[in-house]
Amino acid sequence: MDASQSRDSLKAVLLFFSALLFALAVRPGPQSAWLVLMGTVLIGVLTLSPSRASAPFVVDSQERWSFRLLMAVLAFGLLGVVGWVPSTIGPTTAQLERVPGAVWCLLALATFVTRRRANDVMRWGLVVLAVALTLAVGALHLRAAHGVGFDVLVFHIEAAQALAEGQNPWTDAVTVPDGSLNAEPGDVIVGYVYPPVTAIAYSVGYWVFSDPRVTSLLAWTGYLLVLGALAIRRRSTPGLLTMLLFAALPGWPLVLRAAWSEPLSLVLLAGAYAMWRSSAGSGLTTGLALASKQYFFATAPLLLLHRDARWKSRLVIAVSMIVVTIGAAVVWDPIAFWDAAVRFHLSTDPRPDGANLVGLASLFGLTWEPPGFLALAVGLVVGVLAGRHSSTRRSFMLGMGVTLAASFLFGSQAFVNYWFLIAGICGLVLADVVSSEPEIKLTAEPFV
Image 1 (cartoon, rainbow, N blue to C red):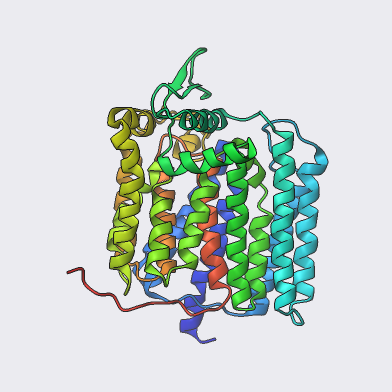
Image 2: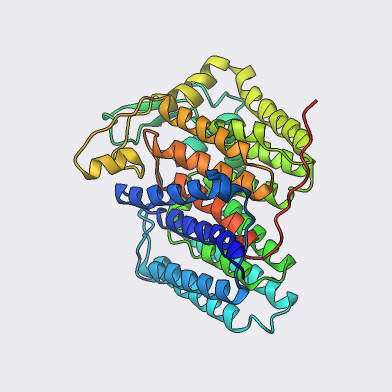
């Protein structure tokens, strides 16, 4: 490898460490602010630096990357074995918390040892086994935490009940006790605080399985399946180990039990990534992903500025999906939707127990109350910078990651679920990069 390739291979290394830092931040507490701060700096250098943005991804050695990823899976698995990130929501057992970590270690070792004689049947067998184990572990967690969760779980259940009765969930048909640290006894939150895409997806989970969190479990396994499919298509051992790395992510059972909706957004982004050559498929899933959470508004400049041969049709389809899904709630009752899904989030009090700059300040005994518009403003600025360099699916997805990460850092709160999403975005691109397929860069065309 010459000097130029060596410099370009630094992109893959930066991405690898960014993914690890964000994945390790999937742990409650302001101490994780250090991890996300370093991760945001790394992904920022990777994405926003002109020299880095224009350089290709180069993987120096498949063998070297297989070993690096094996070590990472073993580290994540051992963190699970020692209970580094317990579920904390609802009853649990030591076996449920710790045994899966040992299983992921064994699967990673088996994948590494058999890498030179593996065939497609063995690779598919590994992916199916990983997905099946994830479903089984997730089902056991949901069984243990049945009926127990944060206010997010109650939101999903009440929204499903309201929709089933033909009521508007963004009105007082959904009234949930306020579970925040700053809430007074008896305080309530009126109206469902998420967009229609999330309302429908989690309502279906409740209607079919009596637990909306099943939607999160199916979405998470769908994400792992995309990682596995990327690896199998290129017969890549590092790609398979990347899938196992995220299957072993210590904090995902906490995300599942809490009923946070980021797994849904993540599987939609993974679908867009996998179908990038199809403007219809990628546009549809990108639009649904961006319409699933309010904070994706910060990525609007990235969506508008991204350029490749199919950007116009993808943009039109994505924006149409956003308008149609959000518009349905707005037409139903614009004032109720604004109050529940927009104003509520803009007026959220700073949370010193979060993993961002507010939480970091609290570690030093300081109090910082950022204005409500700051997170959005920072995100929009970073989104513009990222969009100027975006011409491939990798640069688009990493641009989304750095835009959201920067916005979360300056927000009033950022918890486990926020950084779970960023970790997943990094993991998606990492699985692609280490599988050694050249980056697709299609000729851009003007919007006329």
